[in-house]
Image (cartoon, rainbow, N blue to C red; front, top):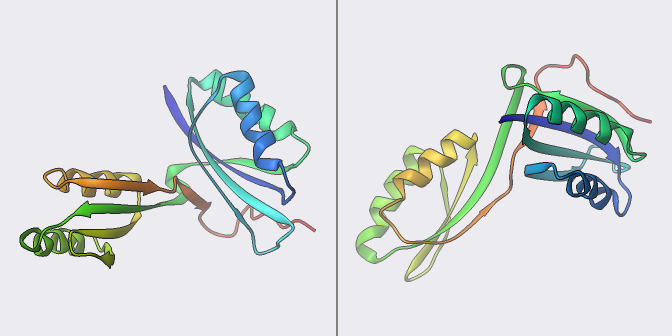
Length: 166
């Protein structure tokens, strides 16, 4: 199994995400993560999809998604020429005794404590999937109450190949 990150520029219309995800479900393709957000031009949305499969399936995904009417541009974001980030929010049970050690681990990873309650904390961390997974491994001894992950967002480095739509 291989993993590819696809970046799509699509028309910002209702149902566009449904049509894209519908293509994946009809064909039995696997989406590992999907993120979407409006670009600098509010007429367009940038969607980042991480898909897994063999090379033939990943090529088919790129071709079939590229044929959808709302899709203006599709390209693969390669790890060596792109920047990827993910956001995670983690709610951890934290007694008075545990709180300082959780803060210490969070500081090492440059995570932010964004909420503290008498028996829990919410931590925000942004980074690569490896960084987030390493942070979660260090929290293994604590009771994690809830996790919310955004999935990968990414951009190609530099200005070459930037797509400007009218």
